[in-house]
Amino acid sequence: MKRLTGRTALVTGGARGIGAAVVRAFANEGALVMITDVLEEEGEALRKAVGEAARFHNLDVTSAVDWSDAVVETERAFGPVSVLVNNAGVVEFGSMEAMEPQTFRRVIDINLYGPWLGMRATAASMRRAGGGAVLNVSSTAGLMGYADIGAYVASKWGLRGLTKTAALELAASGIRVCSIHPGPIATPMTADIDPAIVADQPIPRFGTPEEVAAMALFLAADATYSTGSEFVIDGGATTGSMILAGTGD
Image (cartoon, rainbow, N blue to C red; front, side):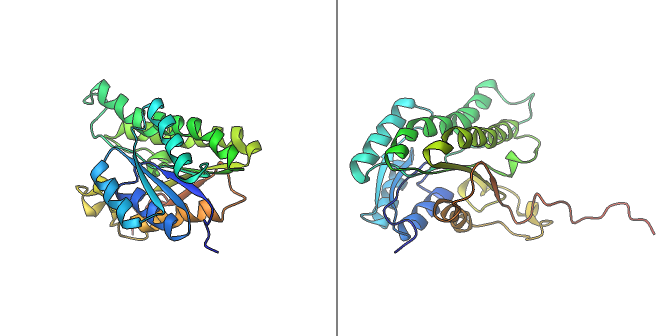
């Protein structure tokens, strides 16, 4: 039997990048997957590529109504949700002084408010499924600070904390909640980032969406004694610096 046979998953931001890799990995392991995104053309193309194990639903993660509709459609197609992957996210660049308030708010709405809405909307469905797992895709920016992406950092630290609260609240229902913290991953979001940023990592390259999907698969299928925990996949970026400064003679 495959590792996710009989499980129904809902993946946000599932049309491309990490989300699409998660969709493919879950479907390959027997899950029935609802791909959700605002990128309808790409989402439908992925659905066709995956086949009968997948459906696509247009979902704006900042809309409570959209979330309610997505859960209804998922249950209608496949049954109650047992795995939620809150992957949808955006990044905006700018210092605290330069960034416009509406831009800051948009990042928080998508990256933090959206996952909160998702957990709120799917909790009852997961109870009907007999339990499940929530995987919140945070970032190394949820473990440390970065200049000029303050909204992103705030959202990802917030998601890390929200994960712990949800893990405490949902444990009695057999629902595990963990956060995933990718470092630099080769996705459309990082396409314009200077490759030099990974040069000093212990593993000096960008990660792949498939590597993050493998982590998500482990958490959904195998990490049955883990909840409220952070799982880092960053090439060692948060381990420390490999540059020894001021050594002298």
